[in-house]
Length: 336
Image 1 (tube, rainbow, N blue to C red):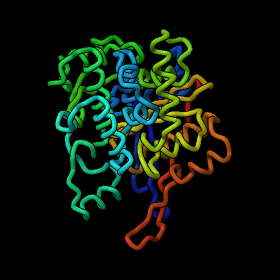
Image 2 (spheres, helix red, strand yellow):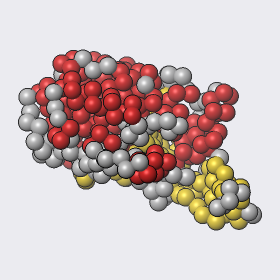
Image 3 (cartoon, one colour):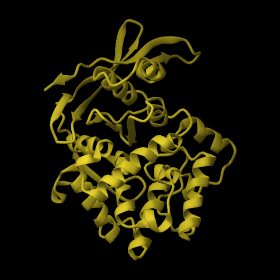
């Protein structure tokens, strides 16, 4: 059963409560700590992107197109559609010889509210490049080209590239394919439903891939390093994923998923973390929980705590900017 994770206060009262679930698991599948239900079933949404990106390596696309680290990082991203994101995706399209109209991710405003407002004010003509999922989609298309698959309907569950990706997700998350619940993601590709326990295992393995088969190990290691070498690609300017990766100096990757899912992999500690906020609110509930879990597990140095504190305890402000309360984590982890 989900538990209270975050309180939103206004003056002396707790005005709102965000409930959810946390799983902390090592790469061997042992639950190390938890809050709520570590086997909560949910769609893992865009937290799956670093897992899905493994297929870019298994398909031969990484070698065929000589992708560099920034390109791999944006294939794992839910990016903000900033100019450097758009140029990176454009570069991949040029490299693989595909036109923008082949992307099936839709044309959307930035998932960053302030950037989206600027785009609207400036009457920016939106294209699929602006979609936070455009990097993932060009990676999927590149995999199709490397394996000789048709590009048409690459977003459909029956397409061979999606069957390949499902195989990867099943193996890395250690869950049988027939137990993965398939839905349709916001960007039109299949999305995977499973216990957050299995998402935690996958991120523990990506961060600590020594026990994986050689081809998976190479892919996981490259994905982890690429996200750390180019954290700005994973989200964008001042984004939580970007700042979490940047300020932890090569030991952590973190990835947001829609409807308030988050996954973390920690190198050396052999730990994966998955968080699900029950009501889907990530704009205020999710990041305080992630930072608090890392602190409770003693995974952050003092300077890292200081850098991330702005995400852990958030001021609740009224319309004139007056601080009237706080948004703060309130849970305890249970250890096994």
